[in-house]
Image 1 (cartoon, helix red, strand yellow):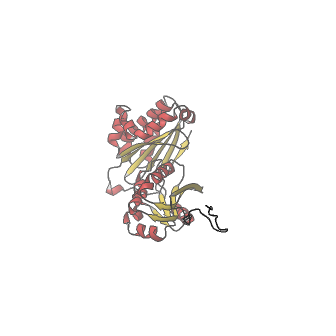
Image 2 (cartoon, one colour; image 1 turned 45 degrees about the vertical axis):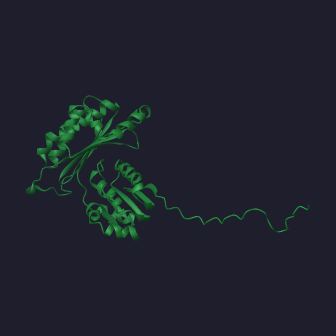
Image 3 (cartoon, rainbow, N blue to C red; image 1 turned 120 degrees about the horizontal axis):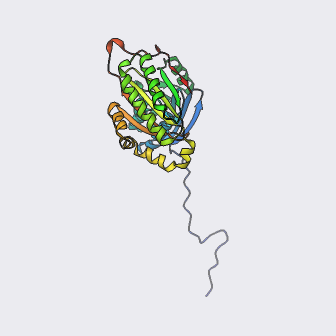
Length: 296
């Protein structure tokens, strides 16, 4: 019996299926940069419901940056789920350090169409063709008055915070808010000093219908020693305020919203938004009151 000999140039191996051409990645890409006074959040790819948490985290990080505005650069975004526009609309009034204005820049194609069909977007955030235009337009808008104070990790910190709050309320022509704001800043500063044992940063900002208060602990070493605990505080969010004593429960009762964010530079930011009762005859006008200069 003669064994079969394969013919030269042929193969007894099974044919291999052709490899399909590799498709370009459509996964969401998130990049952050600084552009002058702006924190730029550049998004690329596709933004669907599954990718929304990543954008929400990026917006929260942007809220803690000491910038004049946040620009979401969307020219690299090829598709967006309409529901995801709520990320930008919701972040605009609630970013809490204290809320730099949000701008959307570079929308095109399907993204621009979805934005145009959603009136709440243009009512809540700024729209521009590019980052440079957003920065220019934001500079043309009046700046709401702000106060900034650095407080030591000392028993005198709450008293100094109350003094800053009083000066701000009088200077911003809302003296009826003095007692409420003093209580809020006193409790937030006390909580920050006791928990972090470091210098804290107090910020206040006035808008026509609300006052924002934010307190950041500048705790790099604290963050290294108790990194896991800080993460747990952030995860518990408002529940942490509810468990921190009667004073902070009063803060929650007086504010329309409260929260805790972890700061990228270390420590955390505790914030509250306090409503201003409407006074039609004395509506606040932007830029009419100078900001309170920071002191150390």
